Image 1 (cartoon, rainbow, N blue to C red):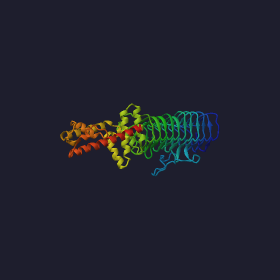
Image 2 (image 1 turned 120 degrees about the vertical axis):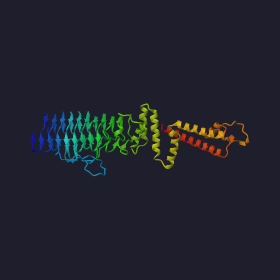
Image 3 (image 1 turned 90 degrees about the vertical axis):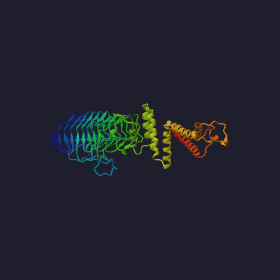
Image 4 (image 1 turned 135 degrees about the vertical axis):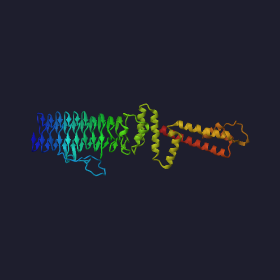
Length: 442
């Protein structure tokens, strides 16, 4: 069927299923406030669809439907603060005056919303405007093509949102609630994908997805989901923000991590990390440092994830790396003192290093004083000469073994003795400072 005029079924109640398949509409279709058992517009061509407050007791099908005039240029949704030129949909909008090729504001669908193979191409700021959309089934969008962005803010989908192999200019799904969010297996977005404050009961996956130029990025601040997959097909063109998100399992890939400076992890909590290919400890620490604002919490979170898996050695290594990372922001004196603690005993996370330093200094002193024995104090000493005990007594800053005051080194031996005394105080002070830090943070 071809309709050359306007089709208006707004604010109507139809008692039977409505099927307009493979039809051509020369004017936008107005279904505002329509109540219908089911609606099928599959394969049809129309300039626009207005269906705010639409109520469908069954399934709404737009499979293979073509909306718009087909001449719209790509309009990726970019950050409003982005200085780059180019058309982009505004982040804040007035819904009543906003224009979109397909409008489903406050629509309620008791069954599935099927938009598989839907093509939207026109000059409207949004390709799909559906805030507070309610779908009691699933949203099926495999192969959906939209030159603009999809607006699904505060939508409620009882089951899953499936966008396999979809190609869009961005998604604003802030506050969406669903069981699963599948933007994978060839999903492509040239604009931002927003899942801020979203609550997903199952999984959010971007496996084999592409976040392409010019503005492809992922913003998941305050996301709540048990399993998050970020093993993309290629590194994202933009940033990945996981600030204050909470997941049980994060699945990612070292080959598709965002560029340094394009990752935000502060406040991000997770129980376990999974990868298809093993990621070394140094690489995982480098992953943290791709966030220029990564602080102690980000390192501590990674250390706890290793601890929960029983890998205590890796947890200590992460905490050691944390101290190194934090010391870089100290003043010059703090950086020098941090370097001393790192070299001596690894900020308390490498205690065997302190023992090695102690044994090395004792060996150095013993070797010197064995060939350069000092004179007894007062010319006579009741103690037998022992270069090992004498060197150890010089290194211990507080307690005395009775050898330090019984012998009087002169010349170069006095310099060696002074070196051992100063080294002992520095080593003891560093160990005490590190122990206080470790015990206090523990």
